[in-house]
Image (cartoon, rainbow, N blue to C red; front, side, top):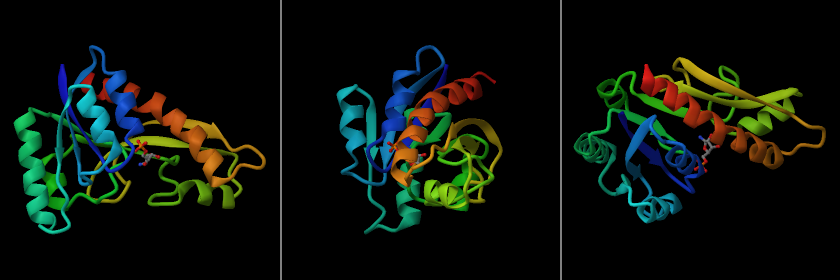
Length: 184
Ligand code: GRF
């Protein structure tokens, strides 16, 4: 069974879905964050999952990433799942874990890389929005797409109402795709 590390920056609802759906497909060995106050860390601790939290603010990105890399290696993680991790990993870090980092992004990639995806989909008049799980490369939201889920844009949708439905789809999609990835 593949060992998975999950990186979060905030509430961690995708992380919770990944943990709850892990079953025999993969084992979550650590939840790590660049935000020591991230709400999801408390949830992970309550579920007896090891955590690692360190802010890059005072120590700088290279020192932060070296410590993160060390903690992930020590945990035995073979795969890294980014789940609302709001920081760009350096090219060096991506190269060290090449092909082993996944991310969930709230758009139908290659559309709407970056931020404000839901507002951009609504402004464009799209009928379908959704989410994608992709391999992380040096290019922002640019790696191979492993799976997508479509969500209809409803008349009167705001970025918030659409985001809530896409988030529910993320919670279904990410565990499925991660399980498939870990099985290959
Ligand atoms: C999700 O919308 C995800 O697609 C994006 O950031 C949000 C994270 O939410 N990358 P959560 O922390 O998993 O609740």
